[in-house]
Length: 243
Image (tube, rainbow, N blue to C red; front, side, top):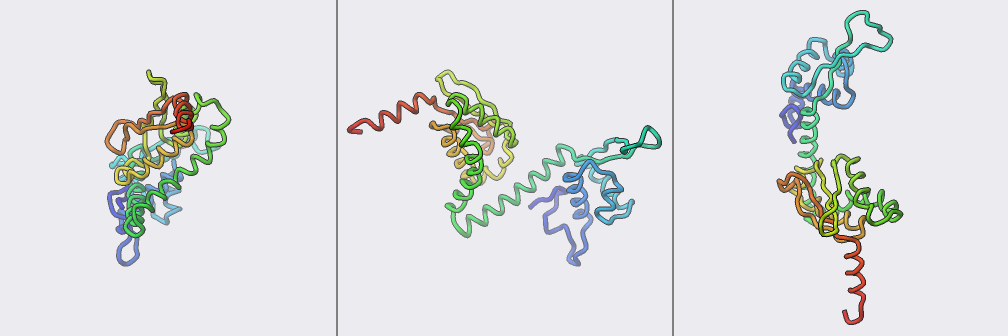
């Protein structure tokens, strides 16, 4: 797994058990991600580092574009003295952590596939989206069918997928996801996209078809949602005698 500072997870400590230079820098970055914006003094206290060591790591992270300085007056201070300098994570720094988590998730799924087979990955993927179905299913059943795609898009946006819905000329709708937090993993394990598509169909109560995915190199994930009237007509035809 690649770390936020470009090293593998195993490089965070030397063989003696003492944290390596880059490993400590990764810990500094993680603390800023999880607790920032924070001061250099706070980082030193949390990690047991000297002021000089903290400054060295902060300077490196600043030069890499992983963090950025911010100014803030401590509570109760009214313009007297220098304001405390805070350090916060940048978008680039946050993305680096996301990729590190992607690497870990990918390694876990490869282990699962090698030891238990592809079916285990499929089951895992379905379990992952089961929470979405359980959370939205009851509410979906209480609203008109024509409002369900919009509601699903709003729920996906809240989960970080930046989703939207639009009507199509054929009477159906398109569900678009402009961001995919698991795109790098899904590129290697399409079961994740397949399970998500199945979940969409169950939630919306009509056939859906995935037209494009970020995982496959497309700009956005696009899912076509069939008109509910067509879905109802298809169900009626399938129940006719002789069919």
